Image (tube, rainbow, N blue to C red; front, top):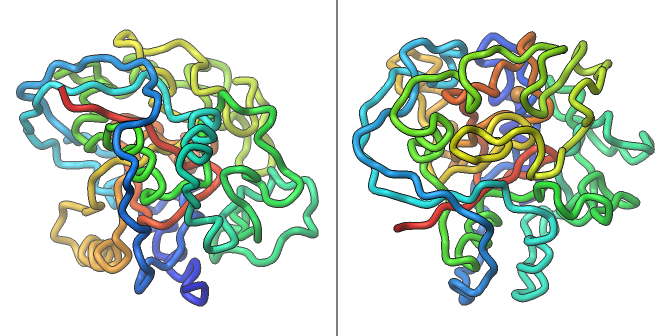
Length: 326
Ligand SMILES: [Cu+2]
């Protein structure tokens, strides 16, 4: 229901005590019909995958930075072997999916999506802001094909991650390729290259405005981006050096939907309120941070970082990658 749109934006912002860059994307999930189930299982083209050996491993961290997000505690898990695609699903592959199935995404059905406002060429398009995050703007007609709304295009970014796709859209695509979304534990296991401790997919070296490892923000957010990494918005899905395991852009670029429901493991009152909201809106866990993250205000490109958004949310900086069972 459109009147519910963005009503839950506020609670997703700033609960951590940091001013999040990343969470302007909410749509009220309550009462909305889920998309129809999908009759096109396993027909789509897969991307290159890497086999991750499972076994005993862990998820989360005992050294959390943004505690309100539920980064900790570290928890032991056992994973079967799985495959994970080396890159996020690109605009090109999503175009193939829509061409083959006629799938209509949620932002197309709702008629709007969340756009990072500095990406807008025409500020007259702005039809309403999102509470507490002036850089997130609701744009009528913003969809995966027109990520910044009418007049924008994907022609120049076919190899970039598809954006403006909801968790439900990602699930539909996953069904088409015969895969699934990775769990949070699988995503972290892949990002760490197995059962080892490191803060980033490349190791423990901190990125700075000069030391570039991935597509995040450089400069003073949100007014000035020095573009030291070469990108204001998304970068191609295969860009920057892959991790030693071979994955591209697990950190930065776009947030990646996981299969898991969002929950903060804590007994605090704030966590309880957050979890109540998460249940109400069917929030799912996203991993990896995005091109908007910066250590000064949204330090969420670490492996243990996470964010919860409702399953029907979409925005300029959310995408996904696909896992497969062995
Ligand atoms: Cu961020």
